[in-house]
Amino acid sequence: MATLTIKNVPDQLYHRLKRQAERNRRSLNGETLVCLERALEAGQEDEAALLEELQVLREASEVYLTDEVVRSAIDEGRA
Image (tube, rainbow, N blue to C red):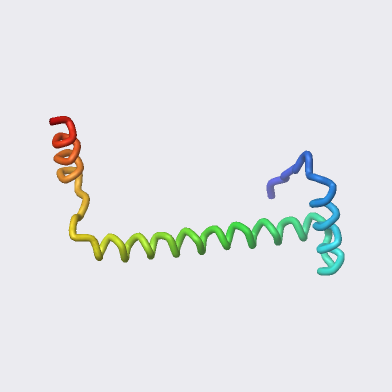
């Protein structure tokens, strides 16, 4: 397993994390890992929702952007 060192943690954040670890009966390291895992999972959910929304917009669009369409638009802009 890898080791991670976090430097320059603001005192207020450290104390909040420490209190939360005590409430959850975890070590400070364990609580930090749980927080990181939750944050990363939330980020993945956000990405999935964004991709789904983009797919809906793409399907509703009358123009499908292919390389040819993009090149044509660029050429028209140069004229």
